[in-house]
Image (tube, rainbow, N blue to C red):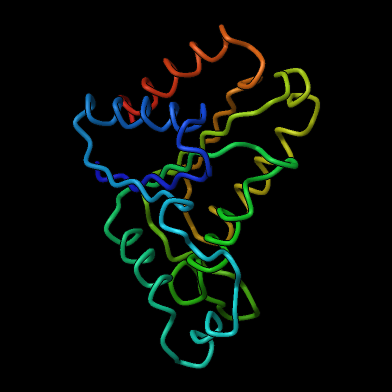
Length: 191
């Protein structure tokens, strides 16, 4: 399977980067083809600007958006690796989604204002590290975050197979970190 991996963490020495490496090692072992888009590494501009609304008037999308859309179009599946910050994804990733999952590419508005998803990828996997414990997230926070995932990726974009894996207490539990690295490798291998 051809997988586009979107990575969002500013520190190349972070645990999230170790997760990225484990996951992509698993993808290699599983025989998958993949490309990594490091949003901080490429200096992606997450700010939705006036030029981003060109698609509503038949205009041309900005080059950086079209480049990302081309990568998505060539992939059979998507994976996102990022930390949970303030109960959501980093702003750079949210901005990437706002700009790249645009009207006419990821969705269209049909009769009666109904959204129709245009992306037909086989699956999406989100891998998020957390500072908080599993108990803290299972108290309702995890469900809220997953509802946003489904709203964006399924309801808006049309991708039916969306899975979100939380790697709890990544900043505070050394044993958990070892388990998380193994899990990331496994998720890549069986992707």
